Image (cartoon, rainbow, N blue to C red; front, side, top):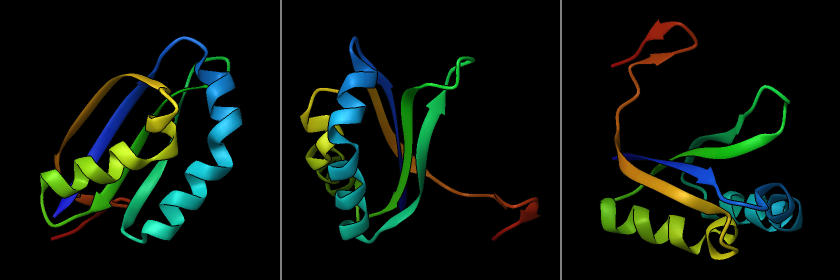
Length: 96
């Protein structure tokens, strides 16, 4: 099943991102279950949050993956939601 994390950065988020980005990317690459991921960008072009969709057996496993992420461990997010996710469109095409 797919799960989506939406995290909104707390104070000092840009500095935390810069300091932990390489570890965050390496962690997600090593996990291997990432469907898609990327930052949410403000009008100034700077990231203010993250969206990560992963494949996981259940919500408990998904939450454990997100909690072990270097961004989460560094205290980047002040608000996080995790929920099941079903992709309906991919590049404009309806998927099953």
